[in-house]
Length: 269
Ligand SMILES: Nc1ncnc2c1ncn2[C@@H]1O[C@H](COP(=O)(O)OP(=O)(O)OP(=O)(O)O)[C@@H](O)[C@H]1O
Image (cartoon, rainbow, N blue to C red):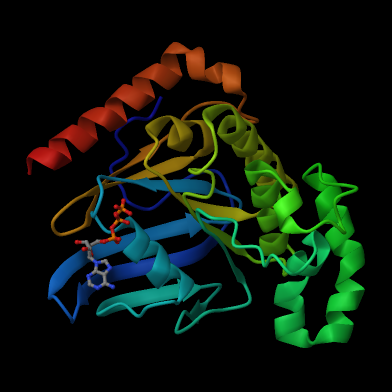
């Protein structure tokens, strides 16, 4: 197991670099808080990475900058060879809450990004693909129900479809399943792994759960607080596909303990 990777580049046998952050810093002008200090990282095609760190260490700030929702104060963010200067079609995002519109059916929610981007006719055409995606996430038959008839886990599955409908190059995930119970969360994580694998997606997940980060990721970016910096990138050497019973293996336990020790060290600084 490679526990102490010396580089902050997510090296792996996977594809070419898709996302590159170079010396990214962020100071919020309003309160002068230095949320991020000199963060550089590279995500490679088809990789799954997580970022973990204590509350307030800058994880969401990092994700928002990567998504083009806020600009960095310093540094460069490049996705597929083009600087990220605002929100983009090739970036898919998913948040803690499913945020489906209650007045639209499941399928109407899923094709909404297409409707906003390309108009009603294009959205209508995209319904066929939406049906295929719903089948992938086990929601066949729920196309025409309204969100209040879906459970929390089902609504998050629908959100995954909504994120995937535009075929984004990268998936940015901000604690997407943290509102679910543990069992549903484990199931959804395995589902997410399968979908990422099928779509050859590059994923970046913000999480508070070390276990979740380890079971899903090829690389885990561990952050230190005040100001938010990358402390280390840990490469997870568990075979793929990952299964939930791997969580009981010694290798899994060792990796979790190692990351916990890094986080404890970060807290003392
Ligand atoms: N819009 C903002 N304006 C001013 N300061 C902000 C803003 N957003 C975040 N901050 C500050 O920046 C720092 C990093 O916040 P951020 O939300 O990125 O951390 P986080 O690691 O995602 O936290 P959590 O795990 O609690 O969600 C914190 O000190 C926070 O108070």
